[in-house]
Image (tube, rainbow, N blue to C red; front, side, top):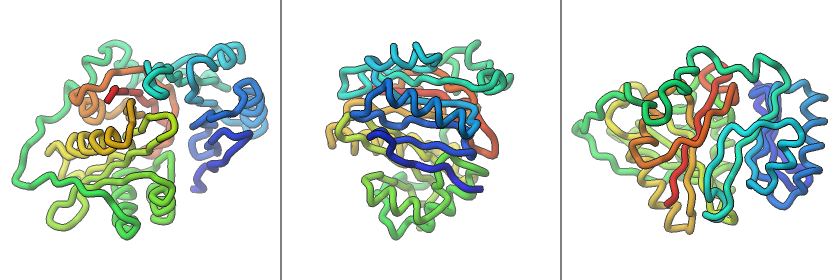
Length: 278
């Protein structure tokens, strides 16, 4: 399947396409919020996308709200550790707005209950040494992502994409067991705005339950904090109790649910937002 396009429009960084059936305003930057809102609306209607998803600073929220957006999540001090970040959405079909039955439990049990079914982490006999990945690791990394995910919102299954991300400042990390990558994750760093997304977590099935994702997360927190990052966040699969538990147990706070947001695991899924001030 052709992956979605990532491009700069009027200074803002945007991803859009049929793979996720959405527009994602990834970074507003210095773009005019009112102008960008108009452009996104026109693009969504021309392409027939089911959703616009935007990550914006709180001062821009009134403009998007007046355009029919709803707020799905909010992170205090998201930008520069001071300005709140809002995760907002506009839906173009009733089906896209609805929460799937399997994910309605999140509203019932609340953030403290998420991940209560998380398996007990077994220490195991292996070390948990986390190493930064290099472009030469891209091929092996891509194989891990192909094995773990039937589909993914970004083309992490392609070595060329991983190499480009590393070149542009994305940082990938891995834990090796018997010389092979057993688990991997990435930190996408926005230095100018002092936040980082902890993302692209993947652990091979036979190595799950050993706490590898938690080890990766803690290592990445230390790394980005040294770079001046003040807020870490993640967008995790709502249907994954284990992944939500990793963030909850490592001091992250629940910020909200993104409905039918992301193409992952072979279908559109709702996602949870978690954050932590470093």
